[in-house]
Length: 75
Image 1 (cartoon, helix red, strand yellow):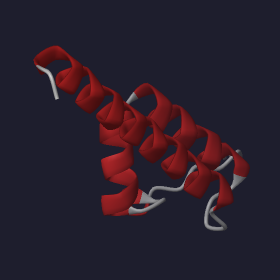
Image 2 (tube, rainbow, N blue to C red):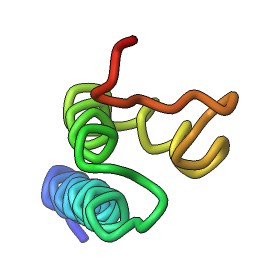
Image 3 (cartoon, one colour):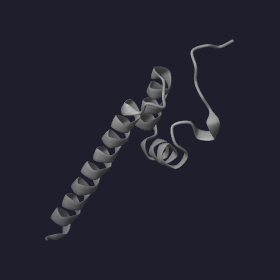
């Protein structure tokens, strides 16, 4: 591989892998039975806005980090 072509190819491979990981995390969130609809959308927005941190928190702490649940009922 020639200098710049090799680095561009590496950047494309890493970028496609990164996007595939984000899509995979979002699909796992949307298919999770443990979350209600509001929690799903909060997680999806978190992963899209903060892809690296959101994905790490999802995999490390699970769908309810620190036992936090989001409900529509604000009594």
